[in-house]
Amino acid sequence: MRVLIVEDDVQLAEALTEALTRRQYVVDVAQDGEAAWHATESMKYDLIVLDVTLPKLDGIRFCHRLRTTNTNSPAHRNSATPVLMLTARDTVADKIAGLDAGADDYVAKPFDLEELMARIRALLRRGSAASTVSLSWGKLTLNPSTYDTTYDGHLIPLTPKEYAILELLLANGRRVLSCSSIIEQVWSVDDSPVEETVRSHIKCLRQKLRALGAPESLIETVHGLGYRLN
Image (cartoon, rainbow, N blue to C red):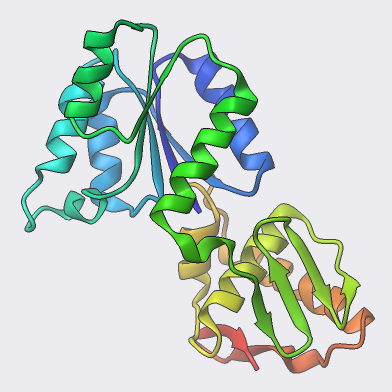
């Protein structure tokens, strides 16, 4: 799942990025409201973590603009994306303003990181109930709730990127995914690798699956197009 963090406190943004990345989320960061708006025009997000006090375009106005965006706008794809607001303002009036602008949850700073992660999981569950359903393909099974991946009952030790790529392949089945499509959905905008990196991860996935008895062709190469499950 892809999360947009909109926070002008660099240290806090880095801490949130690290915490979410450890939990297998793909994270993009914007440090002002206008940069966040441009991000929503170019990418679909599963959740937006939004500071209220931002340069150029504050969180309240950003959220209101997102919720009321015209259907012809590229940002409209995020008009229903869950928004969790972060703010040092903790009055009832501030909370009402945030919720009336379209926020789904409102957390005051300073906050407990684990509580924030729990609120994020709750919003993501609300936005996509299917995200907690186990994905299976023959003897291969992936559980998004526990991050466990098994083949024929045997646990597969995966790196975060290998897990994300395999989850993407399982979610798409026989649909062919190009290297550029995998990069877009698995890596953050600021951390996009070359296509050879994707091929290297696919090679490692095949080796780990084959070691547990899976056929070499389980992840199929469609020459000139990309990859899919066979």
